[in-house]
Length: 305
Image 1 (cartoon, rainbow, N blue to C red):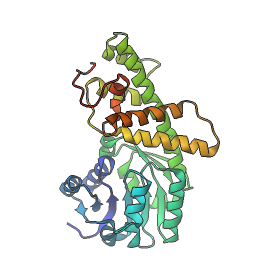
Image 2: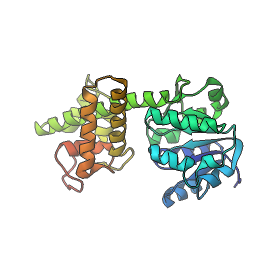
Image 3: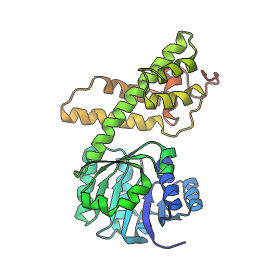
């Protein structure tokens, strides 16, 4: 296994781990840093070189390599870049940092400014589509970076995502676009779960009702995808409820800062927070349905379907 990597992935969880597998399969030399031993083992099995911390990983990154940040939030981004053993402490000018988490636009701007001051290129690149699509290379990336930098990283971006949307050059615009998208996703998911909860209370067959919705004007992708799992009692986390709680909260804060009043967004964010407070935080966001039905984690009631 090569000592040097072309791509160093910081965070090999659901999305980061899927990207690691994809890149290894496509022939990239990949380094990985993650605190979870199981994720480390999975990355090693995929063919990646696992490093104990980001600084060591960055020391073994090609001179024109890419650090791909795939952690959850701003504090984790700052920790893996500038904390003890952070990657940015040993990165070389000319290398690139791809910021893939969904975080506040002002945090992206601030981190991009700091990285650029070190001579590093930055791609604001929040991702969407879930682990299965990331694994197959058909997820979406919302990209904000200079066109020359995107062209320089075209081969990597091609292997990561078949759906790439260049939304601008300003760092933070990728984050803004992602938060707008996730706000609507959250609203759609709350609406779908509320509608199926009502159908259940009315004594309707929930699966037949979902079949109607999926072929009618009430259809949404996230509603159909999540509610299909919910009706089978499948709460295995692909995207934790905490993530949409975070993202809808960030979107509401972004709207407040822009002076734009939202109507449905704050309600959706409140419902996700309530679900987290009720013990559903670490379950898949499909679990919004049993939450709205008044169930609790561990409830052994049969699935609705």
